[in-house]
Every structure is written in C-alpha cells, then in structure tokens.
Amino acid sequence: MELILKQDVEHLGFKDDIVIVKNGYGRNYLIPRGMATMATSSAKKVLEENLKQRAHKEKKIVDAAKTTAEALSTLEVKIPAKVGAGDKLFGSVTSADLAGVLSKEGHEIDKKYISIKGGAIKRAGPYTADIRLHREVNVQFDFEVIADQK
Picture 1 (cartoon, rainbow, N blue to C red):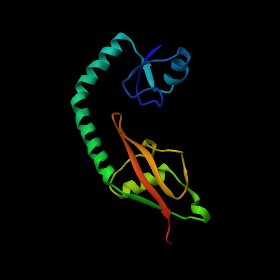
Picture 2 (cartoon, rainbow, N blue to C red):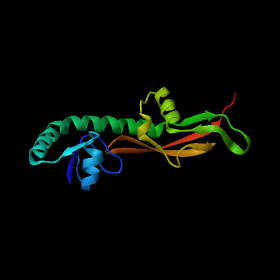
Picture 3 (tube, rainbow, N blue to C red):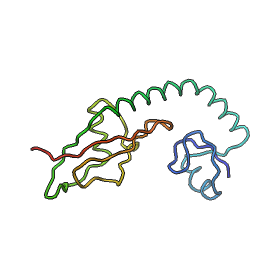
Picture 4 (cartoon, helix red, strand yellow):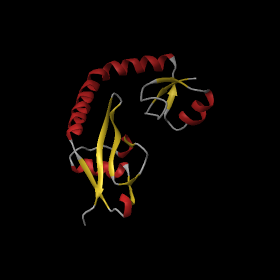
C-alpha cells in the first residue's frame, strides 16, 4: 500500500514522504490517526506542486537550523543535579531537563527532538545527546551532569 505521510512517523519517514507499508498498518493505524493519506495519482500531483512551492522556503529553514547547530557546537552545558555516593543521582536527568537548560541559553528545542543515548541519566559525568533540528540537520551535543553545590 502506497501512502503519503501527513506528519513525521518515527522509523517510517518524514512529512510528505511517499512510503510503502503493509495494508493493515496503513488502513488500521496510519490513516485513521490522520498520519497518512492514500497516494493516488491526483494526490501525488498535488504533493509534487506543494513541494516545488515549498522548496525555497525550506532552504531558509535549513540555513537557520545549520546556524543553530553551529551555535550548539560551541555551547558548553553543565547540568547540576543532586548526587549521592558514587556519583549516583537522586532521580534522573532526561531530555526535558536538557531542553530546559538549552532554552535558558536561548535555543528553544522541543524535548521530543532530543535523544539522550542510553535514555535517562542516572550518574554524574559527560554525556552525548542527538538533537534533530531539521530532517536534514542532526547535531551530536555533548554536555555534562555535575554535582549540585547547594
């Protein structure tokens, strides 16, 4: 079954991609949830025209994402957290915490676009997160979890 995605679907594709999926997945999950539509010939023509019109607007967005990526690469972030014996944290540090720290630095990034390797952080130390700024721009962001001095 050939579908046109209306929004980004993890492990499948991005908005406006034409994908081939099994019939049940398309009919029972993607289409009823409004994530995709059938890829008829007329829908493909409409999509092609929309993509042409959006191409130069997209270039500006990609350039802005690359500028943000450069700014993030120079940024050093240290997240303070309460630490017990052996650098073990009381609680954890998640992508929401990292998004909050980045917003204080002036970079508004939604937490769903931040992926910390290994999930939630339970120990102090250096870590790396993948930040997706655009479908074409991904950043490896290094940060450190340190002991809170309070």
